[in-house]
Length: 71
Image 1 (cartoon, helix red, strand yellow):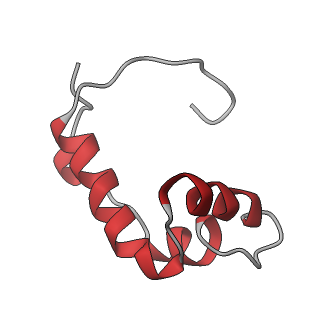
Image 2 (cartoon, one colour):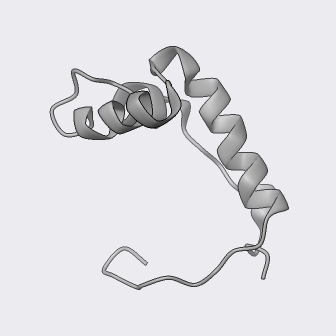
């Protein structure tokens, strides 16, 4: 199934650049290490990652996963 309202999806570039891709962030540094090792991505690639995420949510099928307190 497609993600409902995917054309309205937002990805905050700051969350990617200053958290997920920041090797100095207290809790995000572990994610940054994985992005670097697996994809060679750094904070300089935040816009590339943002575009890839938005493309994926709009163009590909989604599958239900496990539910937790966050959804």
